[in-house]
Length: 272
Length: 262
Image (cartoon, rainbow over all chains, first blue to last red; front, side, top):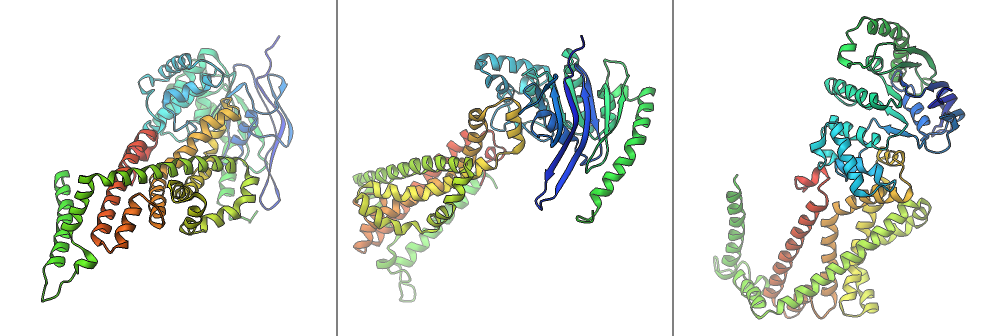
């Protein structure tokens, strides 16, 4: 029997009530399934509601219509099976790197000594074994992301939700972080939903790339399977012919949406 | 400029100021004493008065009383401020209802409360503590209120996604955030605790630095008034230094605490 689908959005529509009383539909009838062990990337123009969709899968937002199912059960409240890596800094600034990683275990009742020991192990595996005593402000942006990754993974979530996690980093650090992510993911192949605006990053990392249209009322307009062999090296995979072919294919669809999104973001407010 | 050079210049300012004071107070210039000793005293008299206080040891009693009042005012005011701040921040309806009254009380110049506190609590230390509490409470209250409300939404969402329940969010997210805001106002609130104590003593008491100054003033002992002022400043500077040490230890995680915030 096939394993249950990790995350399923059934025609999920997300709408917000604006301050002036109008209703703004961010995402319309999104239908998306992330299978067990599958790495899915969502790509779309700025402001298309990619992060909104992720928040719906996390249970941080409730869809106005449609349904979210996690391992075939309807999602009510927060998604307890998911770990979430945020785009912005989400570490607790008043805790050291080690304590930041250990906290996920501590709150579930793991004794502190054991939590710290396992946290140290996770810091080692993200390459920050010697930085456990540092506070977040003493770490670089890339190091903070590594701590964030360890913080999420130590709880061993079945689903990993990532919201442009490497967005604020410089190009080299992003690639290194991408490889680190693939390496860690390869160990136990969790279901991943990865949001990014960078198509190259999406193809290099994912098994499937999903394209969203420009908002408002953004929709899922494309779904491509990435058949590049694993394990991959992000730097090298970009040189391959298949990579370019796929990139060209997806970009031909994405380009129009990016242009639309750009036009909307430069329009005078109220003109719409 | 080197550390020693800076210290030298700072000392020079004091020496020149005191020297001019002594000069104008004791030597007539063009047949006119610019700083009449009756009104301005002079550094030598002030110095010998301070020396006398410490030699006979009378000053210790007054210093201890003022210190004790300040500590109590700070502790009680902070505790109240933290609790009410937390309560208001977590219960917006309560905050909204009490908002005008909080503003009203805070707008009131606290000195006018001193006679009432004396009436209620007597001439002992508690009327001074009460005055200090009304000053400290509002500073801590506003800071904690702000601190709890301005917790980063991302950090909060992260706490939730990591599986924290309300109690754990309180302990690991709201509480540290509120404390950091409270500590950022530590210098101000400690300073106000001392102000409350001294002003209270000045307005009616039997001991303390404020009492000492008030007594000297009552008999036109200007040297005594200045001596009291100097001891008071030194006292406040020492307390402030202690606060800085505490702050450095407690706020190591903050980017601006490490390099000595102004």
